[in-house]
Image (cartoon, rainbow, N blue to C red; front, top):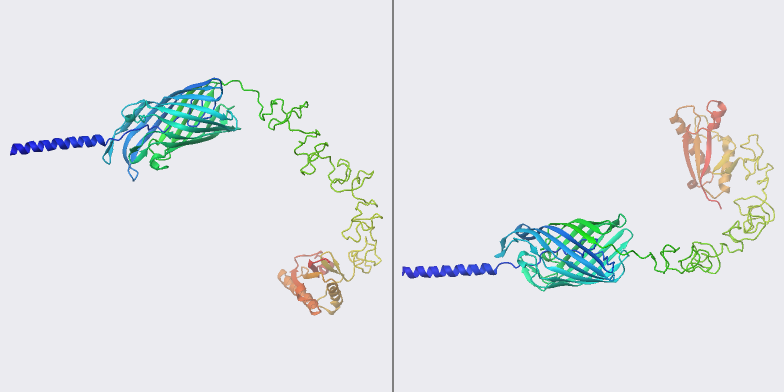
Length: 597
């Protein structure tokens, strides 16, 4: 019995061992073409994008692009920690070549060769992920691109192409898909605007496989990319960023593990006319399979010298730029070097017919579309602007250059008849429409005192030996004040108004009653410098208020009145003499708000 049990146990152990071995064999992950960087065809000035330099019949380029990818295949735990690193480092060279036919069709070849690969095996959820152990050849790429329109160096060039990948790589070393796969189709765009250069591509990568790798589906995907940068150093240097990537269409687009996206900052420089070198660095932006933490790139290639460019004709009007007076605008051929190649200008005034309001009559350029290109007579009075003293106002022709083309002025006093109240008699300019252009009235207020001697020429008053009071009434509006000839008298050191001042205050009252347009009058009180500043300010304030109250009590609306005292702060005369101090002790009437009717 013991022998039977022993034999049975041995058989069961053998079966279990075989079963485990088979289970391990079935649970080993299948590799695929890992490298997500697909270099542009040789001859491009970008690493991933294509500048579409399809010059030459034939034209050729040959060179190599090298890439060093750090941690391109890492399997992570949900918390972000690392579970396995099947491919830790990957150094791949891309020797390749391209040939251009008819300056339109380009054929290309790229052979990825993994010079060095290293990684660490691991088991995740019962599945073994073997590490790469050696280099080798990847899936060979052949391609063809046809330029549809545009040209190299122009604002836009568009091409349509295909790429076929031959299964020359080993999937166990993450270098191939073990089947033919292709990018079909792909659209490429490139161009240049001054110093700005750009390129982009979009395509569908059919891989013919549907493999699950560490929870993600590896299969066909959409590829995309774009670049924008600067062209400098006479066009030899191109540098700027490139953004490129792909997203799977099997098992969910834009999933983190199946959407590798890289941002590359690179530069290419043409040495001489045929050798181009380049370098760049591209950090990964996601944790997709095949996207490294960082990728370093370098390139070296030889390109055939492009054919000598045709003489430039930027506007494609058949007239070379060297002879074209308007090289950026299509035009017509003329015998005049100043207009050759420009749009038509029938009247030869330098203003194109499309913008010329008078295309058959030579004119001048203006900002008004209705007069641009027309003879210069802006006011349309028949007098050319060059001779018109008033070119923007219609007028009449005269023999005087100062008035020729101006509105009529019969009395030649410089005031146009339309504004002249006395158009047949020379006069002077005034703000009053009733007197503007009329001879000056020698005594406007009719008080017998000529204006030049009258301190109040618009208010009748008696003669006075004081020039400042000559011809002024007891109280009169002068500018923004009611000026009084006599001072308001107060009891000494008091705000009590003396009866002798009733007359002058009555004169002020008459002015206020006559001039209803005076809406607000401010009574100001001032003193000399005898006494303290505090006392004088208080006294002047009380005196000003006393005068304001007198006027209110005699019929002036209180809303028209205000008062303020300034003490000794604003003297108008010296305080060193009795006469000066007397002048400084005063009341003033200031008009704060006057509306002229």
